[in-house]
Image: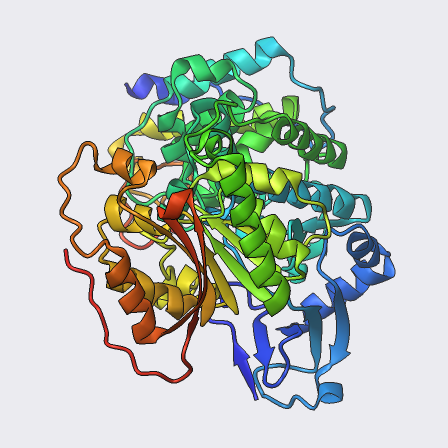
Length: 103
Length: 476
């Protein structure tokens, strides 16, 4: 679906964004987003990303925005046409096989 | 001459070494950065306060040259630390021990943050039990806090402490086997798969386990992007402090379901009459009181009746039992300064050597050598439940210590009868004459005390020094 490529991006969070402690509703909706975004498992998994991100998630609105941005990038990469995908590897894409050892 | 600890290779900032001719301290090398960081922590008063409060093992800065150490691998500055006499590993700790070690880690982290520092990692191996008090020994784990960062040690804290504790508290499983199988760190996906949907509502499960596992699953390979986002410096320190305290409250509230295990209730419902119990205790008290062994290992200590006698006789006691709830009971009732090291382990399957080249973590047998053993109400379990030939059992006891008290439990004993009720009696070697002969092959029987009308015999035994002993291999 190349048409979705042009969807406007989420705004980048401003550096001085106010920190708001996340309420139950926000946590619940984010949790829903997280659980719906299932991806295939890999034998090699760096044991760090999840633990860093889950801390941001409880870090309030700024953390939530960072997470949404990461998800948005994944979604965008998924629908990117093959020509664009052949360009420099996007670090947000876990689906593309990497020729060398990641990081 | 020094000897580097083969387990200490992961963090170049502080490698552990053992100086020749000293068994009361260990050294840690310090890189220039590590030395500067720790000096800053010292100037801030953090290190002294942690030592004073029993959270950090006593450590002092020394110059390698002042100790006459010129090994090129050491560098100019070292940290000299009091040596903890017995080392146990997280997969040998009972639930309450693991929980207290977790609380020590979080308390140190909280106090460090207050002084502008953090713990850069949070493995269970950074903590050693000094008797029954868990203390941070990996002092170079303390480094300056960088404004805006999340806690890099959070994931490791979860794998080393939080996941096994949540599993034990909510699923009532013994975590030692899982921690042993994973070398002390339960992977997040592994933990997540063990919780059912009904557990999601319990404190800590959904966020710390399920959500973390999901994020790990999704972004596990996106490390560059994740690093860029998480090190951007936007995470307020107040939130970091709050999250450490939230985990502290969570961990402090965790309890193992209270059902008494088979062994934990052994003391109260065992077959000992009061007179037999008194006779057994006075025999042990008499032998230990006369011999005054500096170190004793109590094999199959249960809730610690004889461990307590050994402690009263002035010994440093390593108390081993396979029942983690019995060890929990022993640990909980121990006074803070007592020279007791509780260990969850089984002689039938003792902790093996593990990790890199099998040298990273030592086997239990390498660590429990002692001056004396107690093997009370034990050998019938090893022989009949475990199937180990009597000769191999006697040999193993003398390999642990050259002297000790072993209780002979005859086939006519009701406990042995219960064991034999559902299995064929193929234990032809399990007789008093054969047992006595095996002891005499190694040394002598110094004294015997009978209980249960002669069906049980307490034997004070001693190996003859330098006697060559026929090697007995256990049959399959």
